[in-house]
Length: 70
Image 1: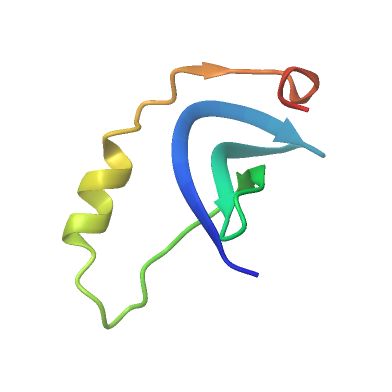
Image 2: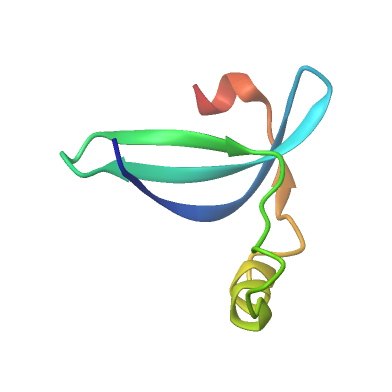
């Protein structure tokens, strides 16, 4: 399965861990939510553009309850 995900400015808590909500869609068009605790670029890769794009979503806009997402 492949999922294309897009970062949001929403943060929630899952079992005491703050996670960012990403919105996703599968190749077949099924929409989903993805909860990301950490994301990184491989050590050998140039992360400049990645960090720039991810920082466009920072600082997180708001903390939301998991109940509001699901």
